[in-house]
Structure formats: structure tokens, C-alpha cells
Length: 445
Image 1 (cartoon, one colour):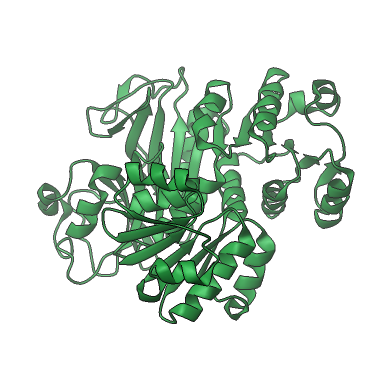
Image 2 (cartoon, rainbow, N blue to C red):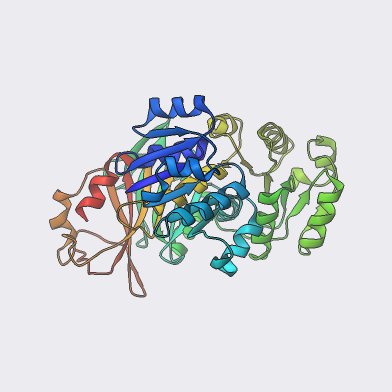
């Protein structure tokens, strides 16, 4: 495909890098330094100019392109770009990245409201990931597949766990889940029978949602427990969306926002949450308000500095778990090294959603793990797939080694496959694979 990406910031650059192997990419931005940096890292063409200018879009080839991805940091610009692209090329598929959920809500209500084929809401996606992860005591990443019936969770193995030090073959594995990968010291290992599950490592599991929940309980003694003492520090849009999503799961968080006008807005629009107007960076205030007894604290400011400060303070005064939004991905390791159990990057959420819609083969879902070392894919088998009609053990020699088929959705049933499993047309597979073999895998199946 010929794809034009508008905006060479973090999202635009990551999307371009993720697509340049398979597609012809043109990236438009007004900043020559960002374009120069991108050309050094990826095999793409660049065009310097204002992506909202119709003449610039014409020069960049939008009239002949198959797809336009508007990924600037301004919502209105992205919507305008999509509308202009549609005027230049009625057949183009366009994607707009937005932060404000108001635009997303209007688009979902009536897609005729904007000339946008796919609107990706970064704050909404981030809030969803936060809530999915929050239900576990040991989780760093949780995603759902197959209409919510299959779950992927990246869980930390406690040092004193009975699982620590055993091999995958030795551990008693529930029938409803599969081990997929182990992450330790920045390295990833696809799980095989002799893989050692070390204490302190993170284990990626895939399986039936209820079985993954039970596995989480086994690891931590709590797992998917009911959250009762939850604090959200900062009252921006991600905080707002997270609080709304939590109340839908019968969790009533306390939200702390220093700006009075914003706090009043939150109080009006979050009737099931308790909103306080105060300084969430003040440890004395946090202590007085019960944060030392909190099960979970989320730092959700627009500033990474404030997020790091409040997350560390929450842990230091006794909160069980601290999660944080991190806007600059390069700082994620700093947060995690400071005792923050999980971080959430809004740009990463958007990148995953965009890339899912730009694969040559349509995927139901894709999730990246461990800074793109691995991917979890949901893909539907078609009639010409060589996997159809044969036991998996016969197909295994043809498949890349660095992959695991974690689950199969067949009509209404979830199957955890083994070597004897015979796959059918229209089966949905949930697969973990090292990122380097994903293209080969998709070509094979």
C-alpha cells in the first residue's frame, strides 16, 4: 500500500517504522530535524510542510495513496487532514488520532460527523489498559481477545512463589492457559518445556479469562480481587476516563485534582467517585487522606515529573501498588526502577491500534509487549491456510520456532490447543510471537 503519515512525532515515527518494510511510506511534517531523524531510522520518503495544507497533501501524493494516517498532536488538525484527504481522494482510507473523547464520542455516534474512517482515541485506550491491569496484584500488562473470553496477562513471579525455580514442564499448569514467554533482565525467552520460571521474572500467559484470573490469585494470594481503596492523582482526561471505567466495574476511586474548576467539573461528571481539590504532590495530604492504606494509586498527570514524584511518594508512604501514565516512553524504565509496578503510554496504545489496521492481512487485534520484543495477535484462519485440517504437530515444523498458539476461539468454545488439535476454517487464533517472525508467520498462516 501507499500510505501518507501526517506528523513525525513519536506516534508518526513509530507507525512509519512499523510499516516501512511492507508499504511505501511518505511522512509529512513541518520540522526538518524530525524528518531527518526518521530518514536515518527508516526507509521512508519525507515531505516538509504543513500537513493541513491541501497543496502539501497533493504534493505528498495523497490523491494516489491508499491510506492517510493523521497523527499530529492536535486533534482538530488530524480531523481536518482526514477531511481534506477525502476531498482529494474519495477512495482513501483515513485514520485520525485524537485525545479528546468528545470527538471520539461524536464519531462513534455518527461516522458521517467527520470524514474519518477510523478514529483512535489515545486517552480512552489508555484508560482501558489501566483498568484491565488494575484488577491484578502482580500484572504489568493485561489485554483481552476473542470478545473478552481470552486474556493475556504479563505477571510478575514472586520470589517466594512455588513456581519460582521450576521449569515450565515441571509446573502444574491449569488446563485453560498456556505459558507464552518469560521476560527478565531486558531479555525475552519463548517458553519451552525446559524454560526456567525464575522468581522476579515476568511471565506472559494466555488462556481462558477465568483461568488467567485464577492463576493470578495463585501467584499473589489475591489476583483479581475487588478493589476498594483506589486513588487517582491528577484529574486530566485519562484520569476521568479511568474513573468512569472503574465505576462501571463497581470500583469507586478517589480523585485528587489541584485545579478547582477542573475538580468541580469532575465532581459533577463522576457522581460515583469522590473528588478532592488539593495538592496530590503533598505527602502530608496523601497520608491524611488514607493513601498509606491504598490498594492502588494511579498517577495520571500530563507531566511525567509529577507522575514520577507522586507514584514514588505513594509507595514510600505505604500504598500497595503504584501505577503511572508515562507520556515519554524513554522514561518508562526509570519509573519501573523506582518501584512503579506498571506504566501506560498513550502513544503506544495508539500505535498498536493503528498498526492493527495497516497490516496486509487484517487482524482482529494486536498487542505489543516488552517494547515491541513480542506481539500477541488474534487472527482468523481462512480456507487456504495450511494449518486447516491438520493436527498442529504436523504443521509445527513449518512454523517459526519463536511463537506459541495460546488459544483458539471456535464458534462459542475456547480451546487451549496441543499437538493433536486440528484447526478449522474461521477459527480465531490468539498467538504470541517474537516481533521478528510475525511477518513470516502471517505469510504462512
